[in-house]
Length: 295
Image 1: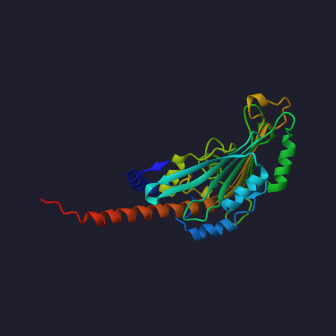
Image 2: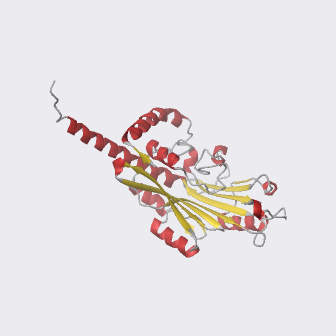
């Protein structure tokens, strides 16, 4: 994705105008600016949960090595933004795919240390390898604790999915009460797509708007202060993989994310962009002052 300077200035001006209205909807809006130092501190504390041994806050190089060791067959696709004013790409995501599983990494961007801030994995089963939902849910609870929300076993059917969500507050305490909006796609918990149970990569347009506006999808909502785990169980994943037994799981997606880490890192990147635009404009103005056309 490529943004020219005019688009950046227009987007910044427009979204700055809209910010008071968005902030008014927030119950406890977190600060939307951040620094690389704050990101580093949050990254160090983000590794409470893991997926296949991979944790949030892990530096990109280590995360890549862990994935390669986990499954060397995974094929990688990059997701990046590009701003002329910054002189290079901003890598914000990586997608890894193989026939049996898919990983989606969301990454912090400069000037932050580049670490994993959100991680999703979808694992697809065959008729021969499909487990029961009871077994999977028992293992999920053993790993992540009692969920904050569970749509229930009856939701695992041809039309719906069973979704479990674990919310921790900023201090790491498991939450039993939370704003229901945090279960929808208008929150950090689900991020992009429908209900967040599929590892849908963030599109470049949304990533660019977040950097330019410094707001995540929830517009500073209290959801951005949560740390979460989300699991989605589906009866089947592909038409050729329909399972006969009603209690078997055809695919599972698990997502872990850290709202404070995400917010602070996006805020720091926003400040980097704003300062770069200001410096560029100041340089252009200084150069223009030397132009003295004959009148």
